[in-house]
Image 1 (tube, one colour):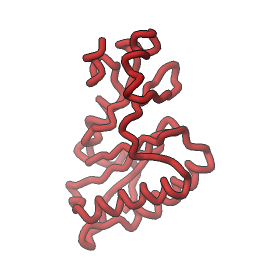
Image 2 (cartoon, rainbow, N blue to C red):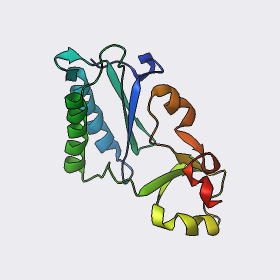
Image 3 (cartoon, helix red, strand yellow):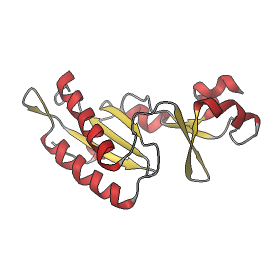
Image 4 (cartoon, rainbow, N blue to C red):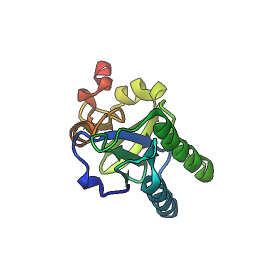
Length: 160
């Protein structure tokens, strides 16, 4: 059961999938259609899941489900991962690369491999105030308040 993202409660569970590159407008349009079709029929043991999604910053696909309405099961979560894998295959995008960290500077998203983090900080390209994305948020409340945070408020703070 697809609903508007704004209609989901703050307790709704969230998964953030970070693409390894910016998505084109055509890709976003197709992902929008495929995600809508999937979420419209998404269910756990036959019970519909009240869910939504957003594509943000041309690089992040955010899926959310209201588990107060019906809880997502392991099988239903696996099927949503199947959607992401299908999108990866169709568009040659990697949504599962956890070695790349994205930052927001001057309203532009840029990614950096974890292995280059120390040198980017030493060179001043990333400062403690540079915004970074915390893709491990668990629910909409955390997503709203802690998805985009200054590097000094994330796990990266140990490098400053």
